[in-house]
Length: 492
Image 1 (cartoon, helix red, strand yellow):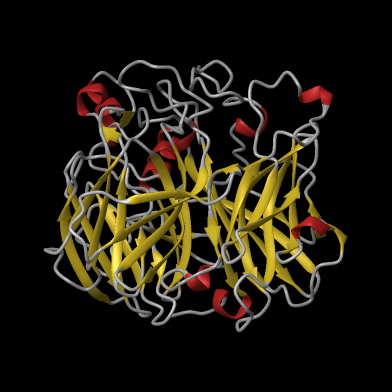
Image 2: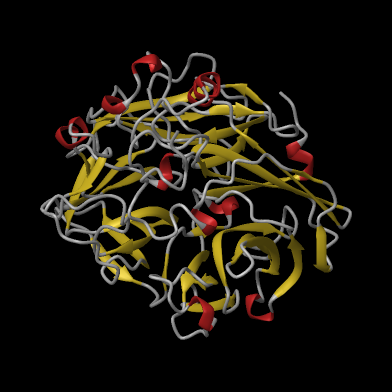
């Protein structure tokens, strides 16, 4: 019988131990221990989703292919409760019945067990968002999964918005219109595996389809995130290309092809897609949008961007080893003047900090914004000597970026700690942009344990207002989402 410790998984450090190991336990913890004092106006739910292997992989695999494990911290009256549940996807339920892994390596149907049949491969392990009274759990190769916002029970393992979703895929990063509340989304490889079709769509606050357009991409590859304004939609196509021949050899879905340029595509929101324009740029890797805005005819999109492949578990086509220096991500502004016919776009690095998983005040997803947040690595900060032998230094800070002044302020998690993605919580519904709290989970490496931190987002350097102390580690997170108390209890 294979086990997690004997099954080869990937070449990623800590992939099968410490915080990289499967967690597998579903948790109910009432009244978490709190150091400090929780703000009285912090009322709501912080949902976090990440991959957590259900069974040892059948083949060498990467961390991104674990089953979706959803957790929620609920804040009210100075108390915090924590709950987590696996998302009961079609894949999860089939494997639970078989009591073993049935799906092969990451996004590669050629490696699946014959018993899988036509079941969805979706893991629901990447993103989570609350819209039209539903908590949607997301993985970009499949439709959403609907989960009960209170119990975390899975309600619909293949949600198509009542049959309105024609794309076979759905992004893990939909945007909520800052003025109308519409959910704007897309799906790539939308007509099936390795197709060059992208479907773009929006749904109103009742989940009704209000717009759909179909476009083609210059080559098939990873389109993890996108940018949306009141007037335009933009994509960055990066050289993380879908490689069917390598998939047939048993490898993962993507491989980095440095011969390919990046393409910045822009189209008018609400149209039929016929005005789509692609602007050519050099090899770059960027997967997350911090924010976007327009100034006259010029469109600006801010992303955490590196020179090359940022994922050590996605191979380079040319066989080159992973380059951790060129893989460093910095907040970079892409801009293009839509009134001109130039076939390229401009890039400007805004800050020197190295980081990933950029976020913003989510109330400003489709309008001009001025504040962003990101996990960063400050190599000058002290490192506990007992961690000195680690092959790589994890991100150890959360940083706030104020674009008006180009000033960055940082919270350092400690010499024995690293940070996961952070999430901004407004102080109240009408609070100014960036006025509120920054929350997120930190890894305590020497104790193999997690804490949830609450900081004043305007004064990160002052340290935590409160620390929610957990008695153990919890499942790893990719992305998270905050839902205010009154919304988390809504029903359709």
